[in-house]
Length: 146
Image (cartoon, rainbow, N blue to C red; front, side, top):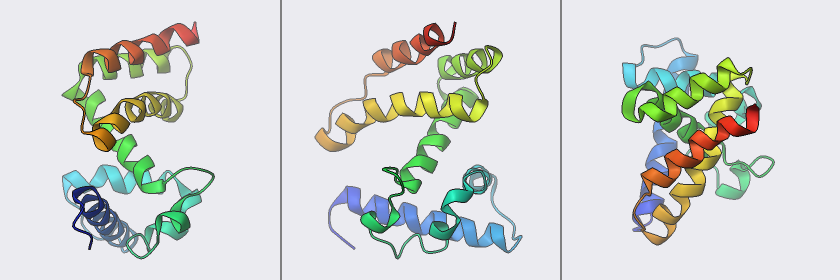
């Protein structure tokens, strides 16, 4: 395992998701914390072949159509946690998008795209997360759906 903290976190996340997938596929008992990622992985059947080999594949082998499946699932999980109460404005926007006819899964994708836009400088350049700007941009999604 690399000494780079980001690479270490990436490797541990892949190992954890692989284990969650294996337990879920064997109808094992998952912790409350692991139920959401298991459900999210099941909701993305296009990556079934990836989950069981998660910690063995390189980034190049993982990427499908320009998307890293692990980053995608983690982004889903973060948005869902924000919507569940960590950032009430995200939950309000998510529900408003759904009320305007946007599929819930697609609404999470739209919010997740904004999240990643704001997380990239945090992870890559160690800049602080600009929560206020992030929430303004998330709320602005409602203007696109009128």
